Length: 221
Image 1: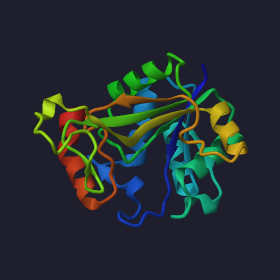
Image 2: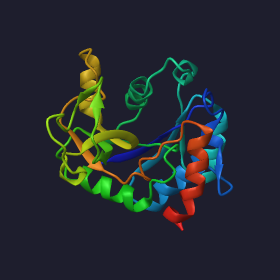
Image 3: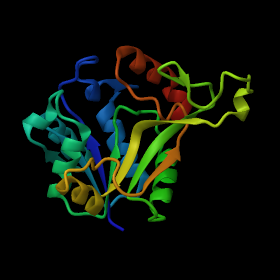
Image 4: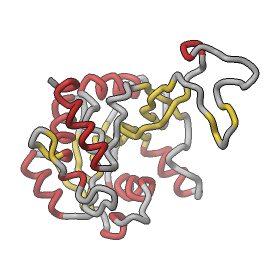
C-alpha cells in the first residue's frame, strides 16, 4: 500500500493571516506538521502542497517534497476537493493522507492509530472525528436526544464532528468520482476514526492559536 502524506498550506488566510507560518513554541505550524509526518515513519513520501513558493523553501529545508499548485487553488474560492484533486492528478499512489498543519495538537500516536485503521484497507475515505456526548440540535430540533425525556449525557449516542485534522482518500475512488461529476470527498466507503478533542482542535483564529499554544506542552511534552 503506497501512502503519500500531503500537507496543505496557503499563504492567504482571512481570519488569521499567514496562519500556516504562525509559530507555536517558536516553530511554524507548517514545520511542525512536516516533522510529525517524518516522525511517524509510515509514509512513502511527504509533500507540502501550496500555491506559494515560500512553502517550497520550508519543504526543502526539512527534506520533503514540494508541490506548487496553481495560484487559483490558493484563494478563498477554492475548496479542499479542488486542490486534492489537482494533487492526485499529478501524483500516483494508493492513498493520499492529508495532514493539516493547523491541527498542531494532533500527535504522532494519533496519526499512527489513524494509519493503522487505514492499513486495514476497508475504506475509500477516512475522516478524523471528535465524538460529542452532549445534547445536540440542528435548526432547533434534537439530533441525538428527545424533548420527551431527560437522558444522562453518558447514555447519549455521541455526535461525530468531522475535524479534518487528518484525512485519507483512495486515489482511484476519488478521481473516478470526480470524472463522473460526483463529490469525491465523500465517495466510496467512508470510515471515521475518533480522535481526542485536543487532537481535533483546528486553528482558524488568533484565539484558536492561543489555546493551542497553552495546551501544546501538555500534549507534546
